[in-house]
Amino acid sequence: MVETVTMGYDDGMVVKSKKKKSSLDAVPRTLITKLTRGGQISLPVEARAILRVEPGDKVYVVVENGEVKIVKPKYTAAEVFGRLPHPNPGVPIEQLIADGMENWASEQIVKMQTGRG
Image (cartoon, rainbow, N blue to C red; front, side, top):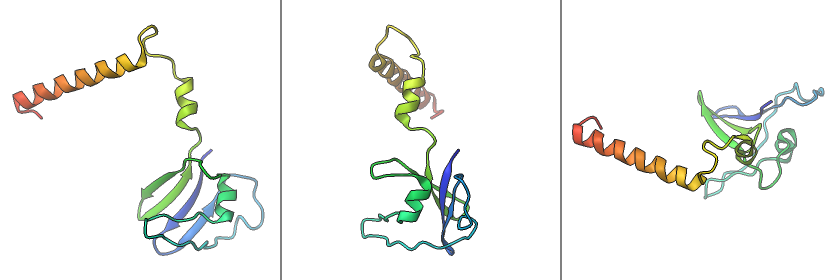
C-alpha cells in the first residue's frame, strides 16, 4: 500500500490515501504551504496525518505528468537491506563492492579504447 499526497502545478494539493475512508476523504481540498528560499516546504498537518509520517521519516518526491507527488515508501531501505540474502557468504560486503567497482572500471576502459563508450 502506497499512500500519496499529489501536488499539481495548477490545482494545488489533493490528498489521497488508502486508510479508512471518512466523508471528508472524498472531498478534494487544497492545502496551502509556503516554499522557502532554500526550496523547502512544510507538509501541512492534515497531509502528514494522512500519510502517517513524522519528522525524520523518508518520503519520495515523484515528478510525473506535470505533477509532483510526495509518496511515503512502503518499506525503508534499512528494512529491505536486512531482508536480502548475502550474495556471497564469507566475503565481506565491502570487498564485493570494491570488486564490482574494479570490474566496472575495467569495462569502461575497454569501451573507451574500442570507441564503444
